[in-house]
Length: 214
Image (tube, rainbow, N blue to C red; front, side, top):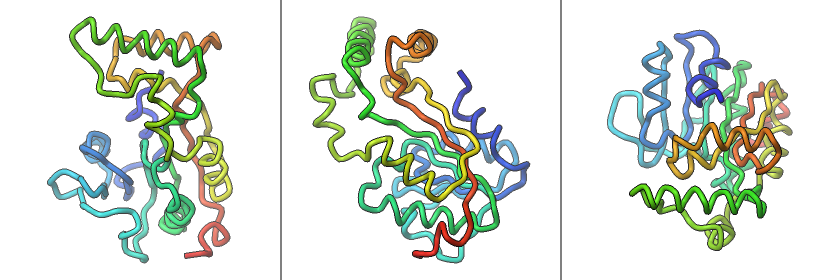
């Protein structure tokens, strides 16, 4: 499976393109893009210190800000009622035609076989001395009740961006921090035994109609 950093680098324009990362977290991806020669602006209310980071929300980004690409990982499914307006803002930021590279998590995709495998992995990690703070399968729905369903999120994205790449990817190993289970999860997803809860999308903004509400 291609790593997140490899996936993003594959679909960005050549450096030193200007890249906006939405919801950068601790900054791992932003720092990797910076090291690859990109001019990075990474935003997050809890962004770390550093010249490429800004502690703001997407809603607080200047209206005239423009970038050659926008990247986001595991952020947009949390945006709730701001999802539509924030996707409009991304389209506006990219009005020059750059790509929107999205890596996402669809907790609504957890079915019974996938939940059973997930619980097994939690037990294995705990037995190995790495207990997970993530919710168990019984608490899953309650923990993720405010998350935008993956089909709703994808429909909103596709209404604004012409799809270039769309693929499902294993995600639970990342969610649990169980790196050793990545290949096993991928093989089970490929066999159809469990669901892929991750998905990736790359698209180009459709033009003025995509952000006319801003």
